[in-house]
Length: 170
Length: 439
Image 1 (cartoon, rainbow over the protein chains, first blue to last red):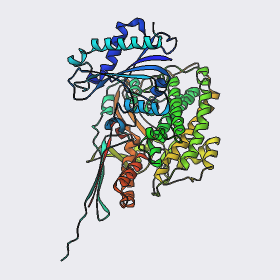
Image 2: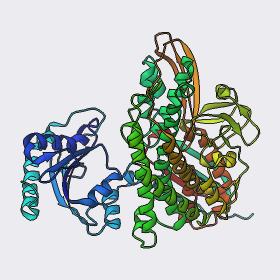
Image 3: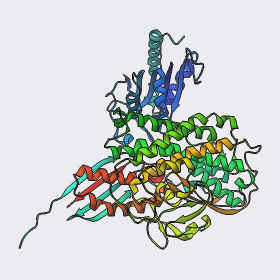
Image 4: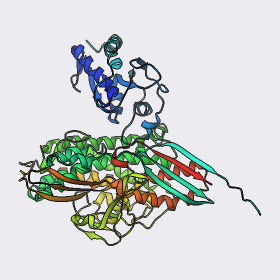
């Protein structure tokens, strides 16, 4: 059973790139915890980035012991606000735009479908940062980028929780 | 003097699920007759042809692959063949293993694209479910969803082995492939492909039992036709109305034109109207090119082909999925890694065009390059663009049949008809809105 940290977002769409930015920064700060390999992962947090969720994540989630997703969030909160939730059915709602695309599936679709196909689900955490602008182009808004250090610390604390609960990480 | 009351009814669906495209469908009826029907495509133009001008010809497969995340292989295969024509080389003749590898590559794309559409996008319409997610919650249908997902995964894996990655592969190039896979890498897929073949044969039987709306049209089907095999990368362009032309003559018989309500061009016959490309057209025109197991599975159903019901396209996709698995096994069993994975190319000025069979139908590429190898002109006709006018024609004929149904059922049937074409509107868009107004 493996533990994953997965950044979701398009690094060429402004603040949508916050997920990959956080995962990259986490790997730099806690290199000893992290790996990008898919084998020999005992005691490691497997780190990945996805421009958008894909169906391949279903098997990955089903085979994992825990997964942390980091993604951009759009709600009424101020830009840079950090969100942290343990996923459960009903936490996310179906977004009309994402459900409309036949080429891409949103986290709602991926997690809900995984839950329908695989029981029990592993521990899945959703970490997010409220986005300000997701226009074409690279780079994060200052208020969004400023959330990265705090979010990394929260992910580290969450990882320690996994360690204590599962005794998988060093 | 009497006054007749007019009943006005409006049906509006903000987002139509399970199609790819940014547009809207507007229908207005009066006294049961359609007075206005437009499939409006407002997805902004993406200017890929303009991006290509001035670029070195070797960049075309990688740039055009970005047009679509589901069918990048189609864009790569149409571009490399068209550019090889412009350069005056025939790679498949000189390195037969590359020809086989390109066909195997296409098998992977058909598998992943068709499995997605059959199980995740179109089947819910026939079974009365809102989505594949709700299908998966039904114990009797959960195995079908799992089967579709596993088939798609195998197709994606095949793309990764040959193309370097599942989406927007990086290994194909003008002249062949940057690197040819080892025979052992492909042989390692054999067990999965054998499972996939059995699963896809079951899929043919499964789709054939779905309830199809009673609707047929007098279509002109257009597809490639090859002397020996079911078409993917090669062949002549034929139609159900007797057309039989080389690819180089395509623009003499077909044209694309702008219509005011659509940012995606509408294709039509130069001397006529709409036509249909895609799995139903391919199968109707190539029934005698099916490999044995696929042919036997289709014959065991109660669906007859040629078939002129667009909703039956889900069966055609299932047939082509099985064909792709069967072909993949055949190619892998005979494959040996070539000593040379690509031909060296002598750059020269030239013009070339080529069509290949994308999952959604014919994909046309035309290039003109100068003596430095820079692209001077590029034209790309996507399958959905070629089917758009046909979709509108279908809706004109179909809507009167379903106007008496409850509003949500009318809407669903219109959506289902559009989804029969598996449209990828501009090959990268987001949603289709349906506004149906009845007076």
